[in-house]
Length: 484
Image (cartoon, rainbow, N blue to C red):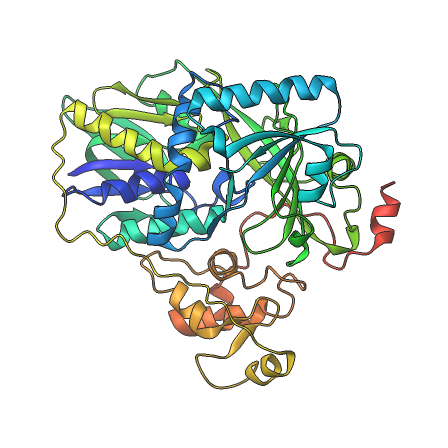
């Protein structure tokens, strides 16, 4: 009998699992895919939003502000990659300026300090960010915005939770839940589990899980957002996250550096029917490029690496759903943007709900909050890299674009989460995220995985469902043919 079973291993489920692992409880975490962070958590903007962005008085607004303040310490403990960059919300006309003033007032209501926000105008904007469009008139400068690596954060949370006693079961899709007087039976495609409490953090499928216990007071509308990512290093053309003045439906197309120095633009917003439709399409990418150039006109399309998409679990209620919906069943549903930002605060809120429900929370004396990084920064010359490509040593370079060593791949495979795909290694080490997009290192990564796990190479899968349609070798003719 488990004390608590968490359904879902995205950033929300893993943040909750890690927070619960601080207590003397028997915890199970179930995930239907073959790795953590395989849903929205691996395919989003990675923005740690400022307190100005989310409407005052909503649960989103409260938790996003609180969550953003927890990132510095969390990253110091888990080493997933986070830094505060600040952001500019750009305005191009009087209507934008009016909306920017409303954002400023909203931020103050949410608790943002006046020293962290300022409305600035053209000369100062261009002084801070010379590559911004000369047509800009006004902007909100928000210093409390940051960037993180979302999949690395989710993986780090999961690794630390497992290290502290959480049982993580991958490829366990929940098929049904049977309710008894003081416990639940969770039936998956593989096993049956008894548990006193259930925490539903199933993302786009949270409405389906909720309906298994007769709770049908909300539904999830999947919304797809597509992105384009550029070469590592090209993120230096801007130093902050660049937003456009938001609308009711979207925060607009952003232009942002990533934590590892790429440039990223997107996302668009489109309602879809299929909850796992991770495709990208030409018309959406054209829209993203054209709209991003409104903010930063001289984006060099020759530096494009690939495109990808992610699905957002948009709730019918218009706000996060975090509650004990019936005794022992806690819904943590509809966690769309700013879910990544809010995730540490959501985990703390769930702890409070459990405590009020009557579960006994006794803190462990041996909880270890620390998770060492996998990615080790290296300063190597071209000649040094070439020498290290075929050496018989753990320091052998496997991925020459991202300077990933054999030692780092072996480390990633031995952290308590049973992974074996090239895609899983890519998210943990960045092997395959460079210029060649895995053409060189893919077979080498497969060989290291097979040797480490003592399995045949043909049992190492390449990747999960992909979404990129931009060719690996990009040139301007590709975009000219699209009419861009």
